[in-house]
Image 1 (cartoon, rainbow, N blue to C red):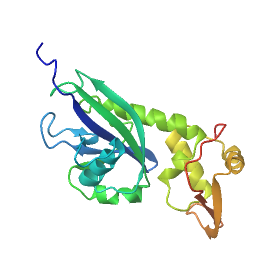
Image 2 (image 1 turned 180 degrees about the vertical axis):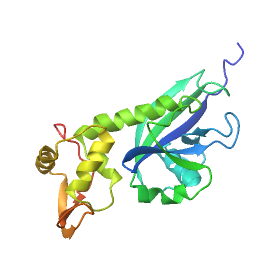
Image 3 (image 1 turned 135 degrees about the horizontal axis):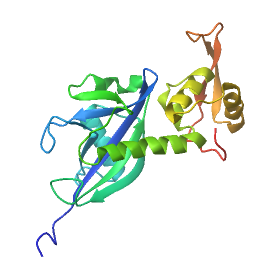
Length: 222
């Protein structure tokens, strides 16, 4: 039968998330080639069996090549596949999402064709990229409620006020600050660094913290 032995298209797509201007944002790339040339889409590329030992290697290579991003937190989301998602043929995309401070995206924001867009406005993308981006945000908000994932949007050190604000933006919900501070203390995923910093809106310096090594997953919501 026609197409019976046709090889599927295998790609990786990445949803790079960050926080900018108090909004959860996604880094997108304007497509240079058909199909959908000139349209903003998620960053992606073909798996190269000569270069990529694993799919994670492929995602990191594509991020480095197309956005200049290296050494950022990246996690596999899911696989999206089917005969109708790509006009070039039957395709499968293994999707990853990354979390990083805005400052870490500086190399990407200096490149032409790359843009940072609030996730609430990142609609109308080609392929099934709207669905993929929505799935990445949903994963962040579900897993972030019981892990330290939202803290990946912050720099190496931060105040509890900065952490509280970041969790609220990442999860898209209001969180009582006193309860948040108590729960953070109970979860034990932070350590003081022995220094203080004055937030712009604060009347006195606040203690600085950093994440303990590894990824922390809690037995209860934050």
